[in-house]
Image (tube, rainbow, N blue to C red; front, side, top):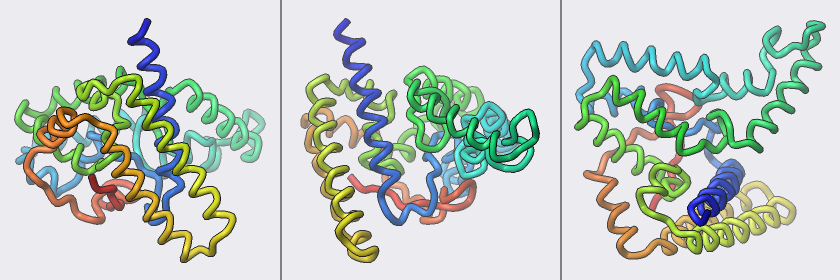
Length: 256
């Protein structure tokens, strides 16, 4: 029963963290950093020493995830919202009706924690399924290095990944404390949106983002922080344009 309560609190925290991240400036898109997307980055593939056969399998794997609505990027988000021409239209062929239905379904999916598109939290089962799929293509040492790069790319957002949170054994009290930090940050950002101009808002939100990340990391015990540092492995410089808006383009990352 206690484990179930901790999991429920973790899901609530993930949703709140995701919402705040979407409100931050300078992200150039809402693409989620996933292990599958990261494995498509050329610099990462070189680091992993991916073979031509593996590259073809990775392309196929990502294509399958997109078909299931689990991909990253604006294209997947538009399809989930019912936009994009005839695919988003209702049975009567009117784009507007289909668009409304798509958005309503998207909200319902987010409330249930389903899917894996932009802005949606994923369950530990969904994340583990992604890992298992990649493990069918990559060698164990490649999977280990990919996970290290993934944690580095996420920064403080690593705490919202259910698999990583489980490995760190984040407690119920820690989840509650992180939730309070997120609530305070969202209130600050809401006030900034109402009372500051755009340029000031960007600078102040960046500062809140940095302070929030530091506060979140401070919630971890020394053992948890040391374990997370070990999980990061050797430093890897992910190109700035690696993941922005899809393959081959990048996004800003939060630091530890």
